[in-house]
Every structure is written in C-alpha cells, then in structure tokens.
Image (cartoon, rainbow, N blue to C red; front, side):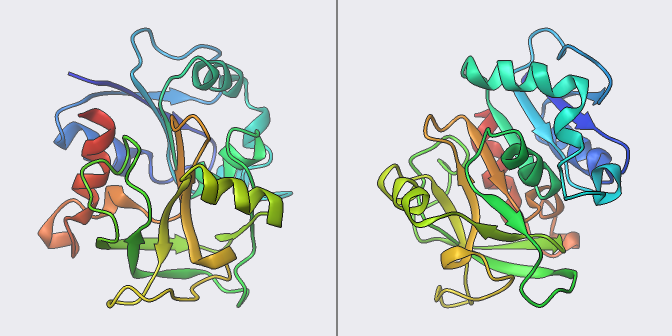
Amino acid sequence: MKQVAILQFPGTNCDLDTQYAFEKLGCKTTIVWHKEKELPQNTELVVIAGGFSYGDYLRSGAIAGFSPIMDSVIEYANRGGKVLGICNGFQILTEVGLLPGALKRNINLHFISKFQTLKVVNNTNEFLQKCNKEEILNIPIAHADGNYYIDENGYKELEKNEQILVRYCDNRGKRAIVNGSVTSIAGICNKNKNVFGLMPHPERALEVVLGSTDGVKMLEGLIA
C-alpha cells in the first residue's frame, strides 16, 4: 500500500478531494499541516493539493513556499522522491524552484472553471505511463493564475528533455488557447522526472458521476 502525504496550507481546499482520490486507488494517506517540519516516515509520494494557499496574497503559491514543511519537501524531491503539485500545488513548486517557469494571471483576467480536454505530450515518465502519447483526456480545470510562462531557452530545455506533460487542446487534439500558457502547456515535470506539476485536477475526474474517469490513469501511474 503506497504511503501518500498530502500537504495542507491555510486556504487549501482540495486536500480532502485528493485524499479521497488516493484512498479510492488503494493508498494510505496522511494530511500534513504546513507547520510540520518533517514528512511522515515511509512517504512514497508527496502531493501538494489545489486551493488558494494564504489567499493567494502577494502571488499564487509565493507565501506557501516559505512554510516549514517545504524544506522537507525540497530535500525529499532532491533525493529522488516523487512529488505532484496540482493547480496551486503547481504554482508552489515553481515558486520554490522545483519546477521551471512561472504561473501568471490568465490572459483574460478571469477565473476559469470547466472540464477541459488535454493532449498527452510525453508519457516517458511515471505520472503518465498509463496514458498513450497524444491521447486526449477530459479533466476539470479551476484557476485564475494558470498562464504558464517560461523563456525561450527554458522552453527548449523542456522540449529536449520531454518535460512537457500535457497541453490544452480541443476534442480533436488541436492546441487550444485556454489561459495564455506558452504553447498551451498545462503541465510539466522536472528534468529528473520525479517532480510533476499541472493546472488541471485529475483528482476530480475519478468517477462517472463526476463527468470523467480520465484522472484515474494519471494518478495510477504515480502509485503503480
């Protein structure tokens, strides 16, 4: 049984959804408050859940990056431990330097909440190993600061190392402009492919009653 640690900050609102998702997939989960200084022993996956940590004051994810638990998360990731950041979690991972680039305000300046089709760009990583390359997934998004930015040299590195995970697309797989992200990027990983971040919410796409089960194969890849 995989041991999953789920971080909780003031303003996190997807921690229980994330806990439900991983327990439904057969994992043992622990909610870890941001003031803790150590991750639980035997942690096999850290998930930074979505929400509005610290009310998105200053900048989305910026203040959360200084929370005591993040030192342990950074050390864990640098040792090769698997870390997944969803939505606000993705923002936090860029703020602490575990993922390259930054998340800016959506190009239309509005909060976006809807189901969105995504195309799998690279599956040469654990997260998307159960998905097919160019497969189209239907996953909810809910964010105001999901506009992914990286400079030209950084983008070339992402491409070269197969770090781009998913892109926003229409139902035929053609790139879609959703929030202004560089080349419609919706999720990336680090060069070592043990730290993953994406704006869409796979934990909200696990049951037919919710509108999609496409999130199952995404999360199962990390606990296979």
